[in-house]
Amino acid sequence: MGIEELFSFLGKSPSTEEFYTDILAKADHAKAKNNPEKAKSLYIKLIKGYAREKNRPSSFGRYVGQAFFELGQQDRQEKNTSGAIKNFLQAMPFVRLPAPIIQWLAEELSRQNNITAHAISVYAMHLSNLRGEGLPDDKIVEFLKEKCQSSVEPDTTSETLKSITELTTKLITADPKIEWAHLARGVSYGRMGNMEEAIKSLCQAEEILPSRSITPYYLGYYYFQRKDLGNAELAFRRSLNIDPKQPEVLFHLSKVLLEKSGKGSDASLLTEATTFMEQACILQAARPDYWFSLGCMRALQADAASARNAFQKSVDLEPGNFEYQITFADLLSTQGDLLNAINAFRQAKKLVTSDLHANQGLAISLYKTGEFHESESLFRYILELKTAR
Image 1 (cartoon, helix red, strand yellow):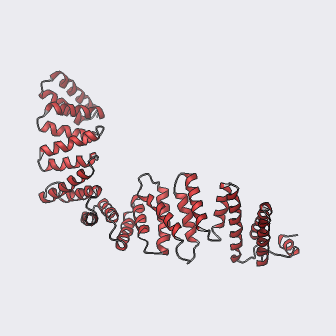
Image 2: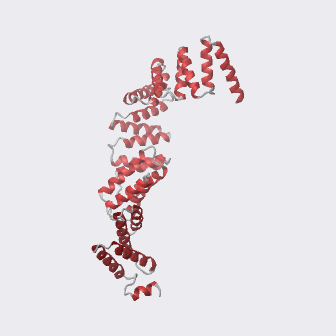
Image 3: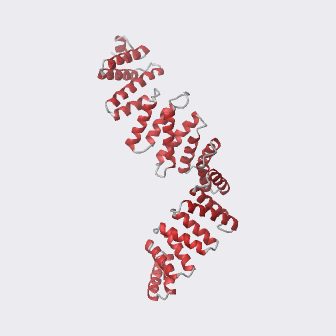
């Protein structure tokens, strides 16, 4: 006897709605009688009947979704987390799960996998099932927003960034006025190297909410990556008009102006760039890269004393940076401060033992101070290095 004949013999067929409503009613009765095992077997019977019946209307899927949901609820009550996750995920294509279940599911997936990509995917699946019902409730939207904020975190994986772009695209389709979705989408695309989509999304975000300073900052950053200095400058200035005390924006605007100055050929642009860099250093004095950039600009302005102070701070903050050490050593050597130059060249040589520049600078400085024996040994070593190359 086939499955259709069997169910017909029993009086109900999976091709009829009565089959599903009858089983669900019996399952509810079993739960009311505190018989979860009986209810569970009935839900499984419903799911199997649906799977085997080829002639049932697709609208009956809502009953299957309800059965999977109830199984998930039972698993959750029994502390069977993996079973609950499996059943809730299987329910999602058929029914819209309650917001607390969606949030629990996403948090469990995120916790188990130690990444947000899986959690975000759950929300993306949930949104795809709304079918014109509008956005999910506020709690889900807030959780989505929190997850999307990971787009700006430096350790966010490429998998998560991709998930964020997919999720925010769904959100924007549901409501084009969600500013933070455009922002997260733009940053994610930018971090994945798609500058065109990044700029497009960020422009939309800024149009919706022009008072948020971070949006034109990212716009400026991605314009700068594309060597579009004009738009980069305008975007950074818009960000500073909203909040003038942003060291990272000041730093990048200074870099743009330096580039536009032709590396110092335009004195007025160089002066403005230096002013912005000084402000960045004041606001965030623990950043060695800020001080190093300020030193380079002061050197272009032929302000040797200010350049020296800035370079000194950069090497004090990050003594293991070869570029900072060698640049500082060169400046000291140019100023005729040979003893300090020797110390700086020694530090650079410790970092990169075989660097020609560091060895030559040290050898010449030693020779000038009368340290002929050590300088001669270094010159011989330099010849060996050059021969080897």
